[in-house]
Length: 78
Image 1 (cartoon, helix red, strand yellow):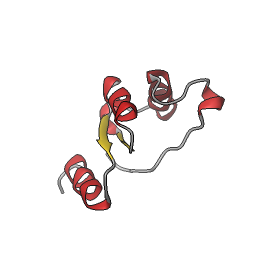
Image 2 (tube, helix red, strand yellow):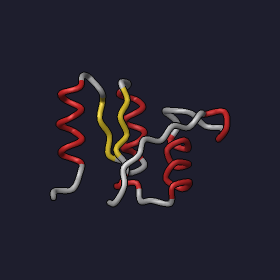
Image 3 (spheres, rainbow, N blue to C red):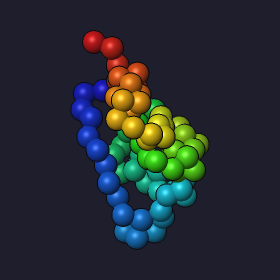
Image 4 (cartoon, rainbow, N blue to C red):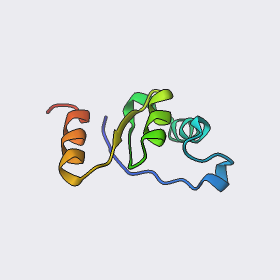
């Protein structure tokens, strides 16, 4: 992975919204990347579960320290 950037999409523009898996598939298609290259972060378990259902990595946000650990674990070593 060469570049990490946050992605924000509004459900109305793509006619799908979280936790509909179509919303996550849209992001994968639009960015032309494998789902495994995504880390989806949200404070709602059902949204994270839907992201995982399409093959994304997911993290339920509970605080900054836990998020930092999740990002460190997700990023490739080196």
